[in-house]
Length: 454
Ligand code: AMP
Image (tube, rainbow, N blue to C red):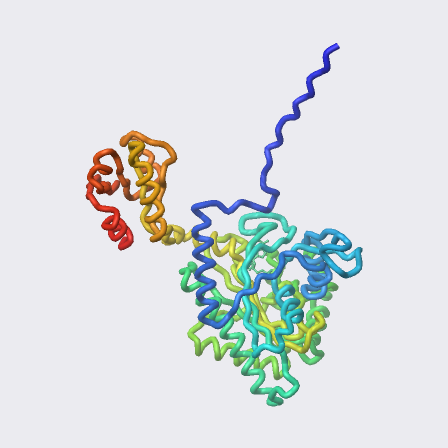
């Protein structure tokens, strides 16, 4: 009896997981341009780069972002830490892919005793974040943020002059906002619009009092609200102000406004932020409904929107979070930061046709070598040209001239560098400009000089 041939399984065609995507050339040139611009602006404002890990104990995010938030309660990618490797805490601890960067940066600030460095400490980072949200245009499950934070531990001998401290904080806030607007300005982001608000601080005579008042008012009109807003009356009434539901808009417009319930310190601080933004020529719009989704914010909150993004039009969100470092076990520390959504920033730049402005390096040279004699010279010249930054394509096979020119054209080359028997004998290369078909002869040194200048 013959054995039955093993049944062939159809080969599975793998695809990127829903909500994730490949960033491909030539788009990645724009991503790099955005990141280089950010690196350069950050450096002019005295920020240093930090690269925290992409996973941390779940507890860190639960404590920092807030256990009640959608991010922590529904959207984190969480898995078991293997007992001895990932964590030296208890073996049933879970770890999560980071949904945002602020918590990690605060954790690193504490872990590396950065309160001993000259204050404030100004840090930035870039990289992927993970949230299990419903994917749509501009919303992904792996997305990228460019994040900056300013942290300042309050020294016991710090100035006791409260007004001076409030102004100092406001100046830091304004400078951070000025910095992100500078990045957008350099990138020529179309229609960048800054909105600001103050959400006060957690005290009875400030936000806590306001939230209670808001809850009381919301309970009176509960029946007119959607189910999400009804739930939020209990869990987080401020978030009702975030609602985008059409029928809720006229109702929300009549609710009490936080600006009328800020304590004197928060009022002084907010007025100073506005004054400082004006001094820096940063245009803003006030939006009393801007509360932001994360628990840790206080006083300044801000958001920046851009064109061409549909409903997901926020490209940056940020705010002040004094007290977060302490909540994570560190010393009393002030903080302010923001996160730019890089995916959306790129989308907006692409919609506005900005991708074409990105320089993709120097001219592309296609080396058309056409005899065995020429090959070694072609390899050496390619190496020399690349060393001075010229982009060179060296085909691995010998080609006829017509074929080589055709391929050079397909690749978008600017020049074909022709090396056949004649050129080898003469010790000179022929450089053909593909756009107009003109040709020039060069020794290798002349050629390097000519191409370097372009
Ligand atoms: P957040 O950390 O929620 O304050 O978000 C800051 C910025 O990150 C937002 O303004 C968005 O531009 C971007 N962002 C947040 N979530 C996503 C997501 N799921 N996909 C793409 N971008 C996002």
